Amino acid sequence: MSGNGPLVLVDASIWIFRSAFAVPEELVDDRGRPANALHGWVAFLLEELAPGPAALGVAFDEALGTGFRHDLHPAYKAERVLPDPDLAHQLDACRRFAEALGLCCAASDRYEADDLLATAARGGREHGWTVEVVSRDKDLLQLLRDADRMREGPRGRVTDVAAVRRRFGVGPERLPDWLGLAGDRIDGIPGVPGVGARTATALLERHGHLEGLFEALDTHGEPALAGLRGAAGLRRRLLAHREDAFLSRRLARALDDAPVAFEPWRAAPPRPDRARIAAALAEVDLAGRFARRLERWEPAA
View (tube, rainbow, N blue to C red):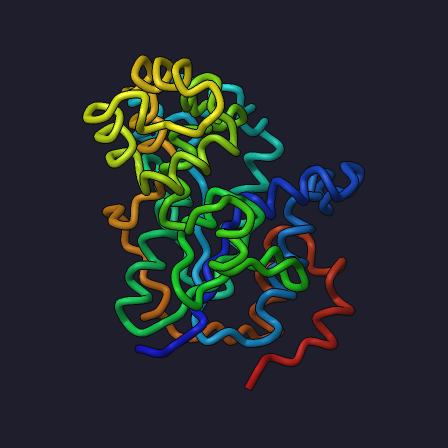
């Protein structure tokens, strides 16, 4: 199957965790188990499918503490709290529900959802699709090319390549270099101490990427930073933390060649029907809560 898209790629975990905090904890299933994250995910997914996308893939994060990035840098996402048993049950139920709808899903204990989405995006483009990433994670903006865009949910803000350049001062393909310099404290990506967002942008505007920056420093020394505030101290920090910069870029870069089968552009277009959705919801004791919505459900032609 080929087309010009959009190939819709859903970052599942961000919506599931968002629901876990946004939907009241008092919401439980018919067996008394917490169901707030699952409830929010089901509502999100039904709304996302309502327009009848031609091709849609869903990536789940299962590389929580076991991914290859943790081998490279043990502090990577070290402050992230692992799901407790109740949330772990809901995460599993969320994936089962998506699979019951016949959606193309993928997960790995070595590669993050970012890698799976990047791999699917590259493959989709090679088959003539534009890409639409559904997420709120800024790290996934690096996936955008040409006419691609990121959408923050069914009615959320839309970001394109031009918007990325306005926000960061660099194109999406250079965001890993940008994070290599500025780092990301939340994800445990060190970057270069003392280099913030503005300095990272200025350095990449001038030198393009990390290789160009450090080649200029090696060749020209401090003049490579002429005009930048505190150029002498900045040069010392960059040279002292060269390895940190390249490591940080590697941690931040989403791999587009992950060895995981995830080709949503080849899958049949998702065309959910009410009976199948009702059966999937019944398995997790939520059918009654969505009965009215199911009664109004009209699958896209």
